[in-house]
Every structure is written in C-alpha cells, then in structure tokens.
Length: 164
Ligand code: RP5
Picture 1: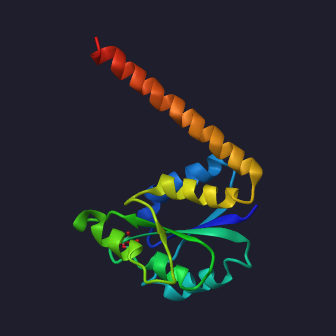
Picture 2: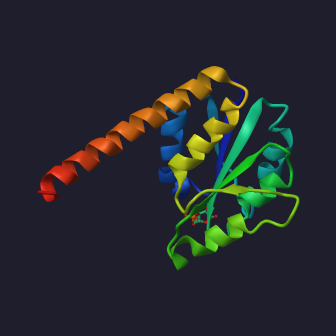
C-alpha cells in the first residue's frame, strides 16, 4: 500500500495531526510525519515533495497556520494529491491559514479541509487510496455505517427525552 506523508509547519500543529494519525492507524494505512516549513525549512519541504512519489507516497497531507503556504509549495513540487489543513493560531481564528491554503492558482490544486480538520484530512487520504484498494474501500463503507448507527442512537436519545 502507498504511504501517506504528513507534513506540519511546526510541532505546535501536532495536536491536529494526531487526529489524522488516529484515522490512518484505524485503517492500517502506513504514514510518515515530518516538521517541514515552507518558510523556516523550505529546502527540506521541497526536497520531500520532489522525492515523495519515488519514495512510495500516494497522498500528502500538509498542515500549517498563519501564512500557510506549506500545502501550496508542496503541491507545486509534486503531482501527487495534496490535502491542506489550515491550522488555527493565535490571531484571526485560522481565517489567515484557510485562505492561504485554499486559494490556490489554477493548475496547482490543494484539497483543503476545514480549519483544524485533521480527522477529515485522514479520511480523505484513505478515500483517495481506496480508489485502487478494494479492502480499504470496504473498510470505509463499514466505518460510514458504524458512524451512522452512532448518530441515529444519539437522535433516539434526544427524541425520547424531548418529544413526548
Ligand atoms: C506556522 O506558524 C505553523 O504551521 C504554525 O501553525 C504557526 C506557528 O508556529 P510556531 O510559532 O508555533 O512554531 O508556520
């Protein structure tokens, strides 16, 4: 199976990426994590992106806050799909990172999830790998069914409490 590459602009982004790691572990998808910044360590970030395909990666997830250029820079140096996670930092409530990540020029897409959307980034990466992996696709369907059952159970509890 292809690996998922997880890059974060700073180790302060790690709590968001732990949610991503939990999803990938749940689906038994191999991954690597690195702290590479588009600004602080641009050479390392670009080197990783340039070699990602030959190094066995199938999807890259890039998380960054503030002027969040990591996903865009990585996407500019690979044709692998890149998922961007805008991270909420101290100012502007993550709107800075959201716009920096999502507003990519035509030709270099970044599939951007919600601000701090670590779990959805993991699920989206699994969905991308599942296109060519039937077992993974089946696991996704099972998870969706289980999640639906949990929500219906919550609905039942609320209905029983309030709808007399
Ligand atoms: C971004 O700046 C990082 O991705 C992080 O979200 C933010 C703050 O970084 P630190 O100052 O906590 O290292 O580059």
